[in-house]
Image (cartoon, rainbow, N blue to C red; front, side, top):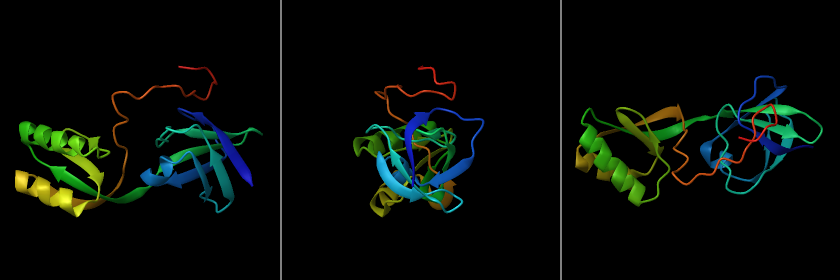
Length: 151
């Protein structure tokens, strides 16, 4: 079984793709399958969250590109920036991974949180999207890009 032990920020040349949900991209050690069906293992430093477009490299030089899987998420939207800011504050207080765009907040489905945001005045829908939440203010950047040079 192929074992990926190295993380790269971006890859341009790769021989395989690996589509993973956000929950799987948070795990440091997993057994999964490449998009072609081949079983692989991933063994990375704990605390690293893989992003769509990242690369994984095996000790024998095989490179796979990570693809953020499309998954069902809650999308809270409003044209009122203050209301969105308040909603982001409340979700942050609950330590929810949150993807932030200009007019919406995206998070993993939670019906209690959906109801809370509707009661605040936001429109909440469930949609199929790739989920790429913010990495956090204290995230340390220790990974390498495809050239192998530290950032």
